[in-house]
Length: 125
Image 1 (cartoon, rainbow, N blue to C red):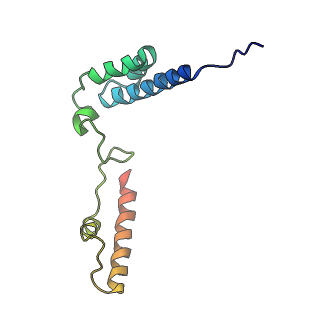
Image 2 (image 1 turned 180 degrees about the vertical axis):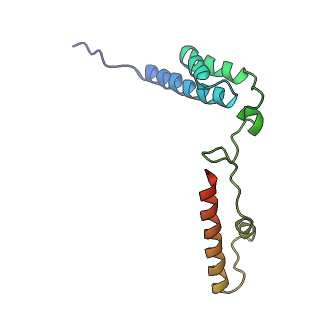
Image 3 (image 1 turned 90 degrees about the vertical axis):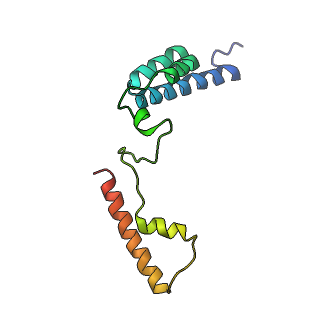
């Protein structure tokens, strides 16, 4: 009996390397200011070598690679920096210790959740 649909594990791993390198090359090229199509072309045609070529491409002026650095920063879906309200940042520095009565803590929590709602609303506006 001849089975045509069976591929080996090695071929499956090579397929994964090909697809992942194409996706990463596309993402990197877009961050470097060349657009996704350039990276996708390199990744699909040259596989892992294409990913290395995209890594060696210089970043264009004004690209996200130049603006934010190599790693993507703490940015939301809209590309705006996420900032934590000052009250929340101060609360985190306390290390979870309670300061004041239970009523004071409840008031702070309500106030902090209000600030976070404002923050989420302004994130993509």
